[in-house]
Length: 561
Image (cartoon, rainbow, N blue to C red; front, top):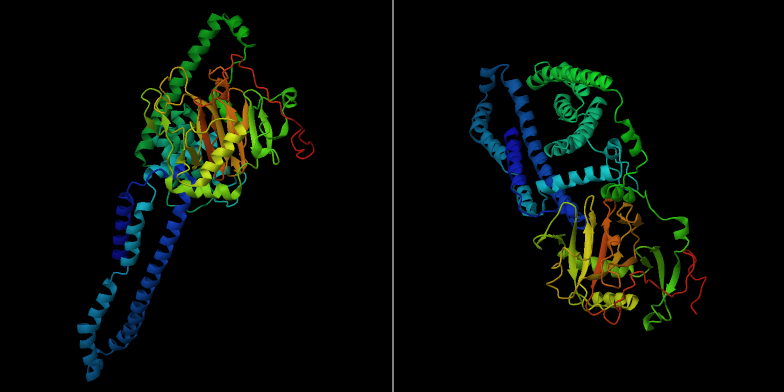
């Protein structure tokens, strides 16, 4: 039996390493749901294998019990026992026939059906890259949303429905992946979590010595010699013969002495030189450094740093909107809400129905591919670590509904859709995000949309097709704006001023999805065809709306004149 299990383990190990290239599962929650059904089928197959194996073992056990009882009686008086001719015959029969039958039973291969199913399903398995991508996504979420390691490890994330704690092995794996990237900060966090759970008595195949070895080195790499020395001493208290730890102990102690000597020398030098140069430092105290874009982006993702003053907020309104008495919306105008003033961003409520959303998702799902970006130097489409999602492109040829939705966008924006890009549908993966970017082509990218022949991207229309439990906002770091996903709504903004110049305040990002599944779809509307619909205007501040307005939350209290 041990040999059979070993053979099965070797085969499974080989199988997992040779999985065919079905990559980037982690970049789309929609595609990852298929893996749950694949795993369910595998579990069913595994349980059937266990049932057959247990049945075989039960037969072997019954036969062994019978023989044990017979042998105990026989060896008490071997000659007397075999003096009975029936016993002599049965002994010959057992050794010549029955033991052979037992050998056949034990050697029978009950794994065939299970292995066959594994082989069939292997093309649906994620790869090493998927596992690494999902791990790095957890680290990204930890940083963006300032999550404590223990919060993630215990599964206590905001908005979760299915709480899932992490084992020592899970935490150790995250630490190892960080370590392989020379990310010693996260290595320390997750090795410390592994150690904490081991100290609390959690059973694991990972031992404390292994964790402490990683932990001491990660702490040393961050310049904390004293702590690294303490961890190394603890490691040696568990394994006094650990060669690397013994070498590190001597090295760390030497480095500590050297560090103290350098500090004393520097202090003496400072005492000798006095306080010259302090005036320059005092002048700098009043200067406030601008917040780097990355930090601002992450703050906005957390709902912090939103730069909307009460006075500006008072100028944002909601309205029933018919786009200058468009016949389609005269009797049933849509709900439009001002989300931001500069750049001007509006949200349309209840603009796409649940059934339409489900249809778009079903059309897109089989077409989803890893989302790409255009290389600003080569112009070639390529994947990027700062865009974690999958996307698909839909047209009216795929389903008449797409033409219907496009017409709706045209009726509400007044812009030509024939020159717009196809509808893009995107589904975000684990920690799915798209870091700060522009939708329009800048002056240093003159050939950005040359192959389309429709000019620059004048405007963006973005449908939110799901609610997101936590995270997933669309943020504009330059202006401190954040727009949160709400199923059935859409937001719209112009990327270009009426003069044709790019509006750099529209630089935006999709925040990492912390908990939930984010589906969006968008239309990028181009310049060509808008000559009479949005005429050129040298006045970049011309944003006159001319629509009846009222405070948000009061739908129905103001009628259109």
